[in-house]
Image 1 (cartoon, rainbow, N blue to C red):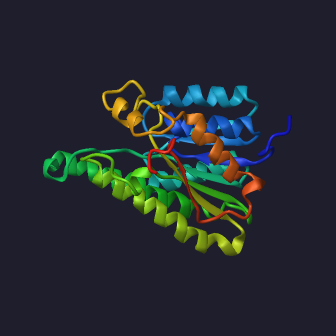
Image 2 (tube, one colour; image 1 turned 90 degrees about the vertical axis):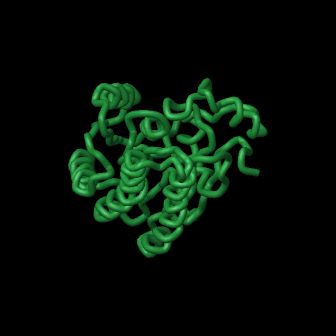
Image 3 (cartoon, rainbow, N blue to C red; image 1 turned 30 degrees about the horizontal axis):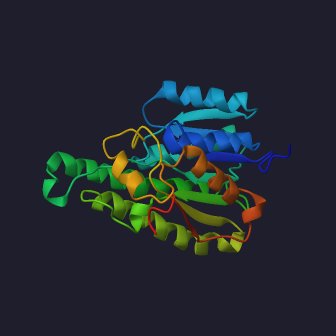
Length: 251
């Protein structure tokens, strides 16, 4: 069976868990060598690396807090060195969420909002800037956004939604910046996906399923397959686009 990404290299930030881990596995399944980053759990990261190796990939995990610019930048340098000096596919998946209505944002929560913005927005900028010199002409940049950038389904998500709306605009703007080099930049916008951050059996799950025409949570594979498509030659003339993957939640 042919593999869409044989011989290519990929960096997946936040690849030790959830959507990021699913993306890393799918890229490896399609033939790519993959570096993932993680913030805290070395054990989880090593489990993902073992999975990638079992799929035939050359794989490595780098510890980095994406909210800290020099750590995000250094992680890219380490990834590029491991991958032979070239990153064909950059997937910006690392992110955190802080929830609460604006009147509930005490000083502790505001510190969390600051870290969220530093991770989700500034960290994505720093990572992409650092990776730009290792991206070949015709490379791929894929950003993981969220449908809440366009639809607020409940109270308490405004600040998180703002961070993801920034991702949408970065994707559009970077498509212009990288276009002359043939590098495509696209955004996937997941809806409710079954992860440890938003489990399908969690306290808010029933309400999310009720608003989803397909009547279920998404899986990490649902998102990963779309990312792999954007990373492949089949998406060579698609850039600056936003792909919603939410089971119809936002219609």
